[in-house]
Length: 95
Image: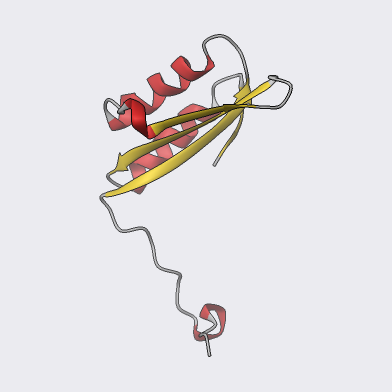
């Protein structure tokens, strides 16, 4: 029988760093969207290999979804990336 974390008062396990961590960014499909997103991520995570970047357009090509897998070093790094990505005008969601 699974243990209910809420009933035991335990906190769910945190991420163990360093680790590979995917970040998904969804936004308007503007010309420089992918480049702008990668510039922010690489500011904190260093260069990202092309095989760790996946991009997919929406059915009507209005939106673009980009998943970038980084070598995450800590919560502070992830927090900084997420905050800066959310400042980009064409970004609608960061997961």
